[in-house]
Image 1 (cartoon, rainbow, N blue to C red):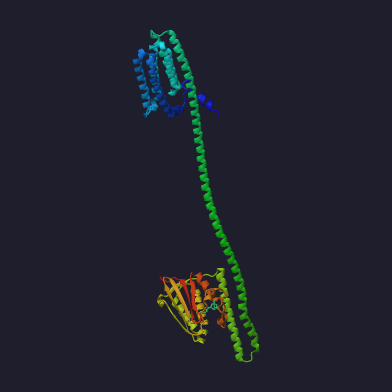
Image 2: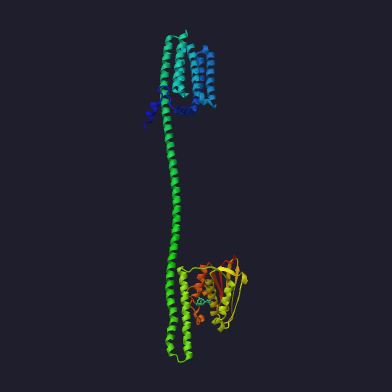
Length: 495
Ligand code: ADP
């Protein structure tokens, strides 16, 4: 990178101005850097200008009064510039003001120079000091050059007209002035070039800085964007991990369930073969014994046993078929309108002559929750009947004495059916498992009762299928109450 070439190529050869808007910026900048020096320079110059007044009293006694006036005027102007440097608009006219102040100071010296040509060394020294001071007052190269040459020309013209000035004095003084001006111009030129070069560098650095800042900002934005993207991706990943963990858990659960179901299936098959074999053995065994019966009564007894076992086997097979159908999902619920009170009556009639009720002299009773003519309901009659029969049958089976009572209520389309007995009851820890397949509660107390362990499982499955539920509350040796609930439509409209 070659800043100086770039810089010198573009600067105006004489004015040294920038060709573009940099000029305005440079002037502003130059002012900011210079105005304090200007102030100090003017103070020093006015001091020197005034101090030479003392020398006047020695060197130019005759003109002392006139010289003092000139000095007072010039010093006043110089100090006025110092004063103006404190005003707000100084920046706009400072170079012109300095230009004129400089000219004025020089004209003062020219006048003195012409009036006392014999003291030319004194005046020339004064002029040189003044010219040197020009650098201090920060006149730009061009203004300085113009002002200095005006001073020289003015001096030559004015002194040529003055009769008392010898032409040799004019030549020697002019020689001094021109020499000093050339040196001053060179210094001002070099100084200004250097200043502008610096300024140009400063501008380029500022530009580069701005570019870097821009890049930085872009980078920051990019980093921000990336961070945001990463964060959201992180969040997504976390969610995914969460859902995967959930799926994994579900899979483990499903696997456990499948294993459990497999185990249950095996147990079911084992149970089933056992349950079937028992009545089958009875049937085959007693059928063989038929031929050997000693009398009519024994024959009758064997036939009775065979029929009983056959019935049990049939029940068992029916239950197994029902359960299989439910589990295979092929059991269809068939709803129809029917009279609930008629159903309860059928069940009552059926159980009032049932073996257990009759043999154990149980007191069977029931109560309807609706009047006969309001008891139309829309449900699967066959399944509902089977459910109630299962529960009443269990009540009869597991009650040795006392009462069996069933009743229902139907409120807000919910049928609530209660079957209460004063039977052997169920241990608390078994009250949940009795609804599982082949679950029969405590063996010794339930022995002697015809049992498959399927009734409650079928009942619960039916109810689930129809959107209902079942619970039991029971106390050992006191009795049990089975309650099932079923959503049921009873807004019968015959039209
Ligand atoms: P099963 O009666 O054929 O054994 P269930 O599924 O109907 O099969 O009943 C399961 C078990 O629940 C029965 O073996 C019995 O121990 C118990 N149980 C059912 N109902 C009653 C009841 N009303 N009182 C006492 N125990 C009962």
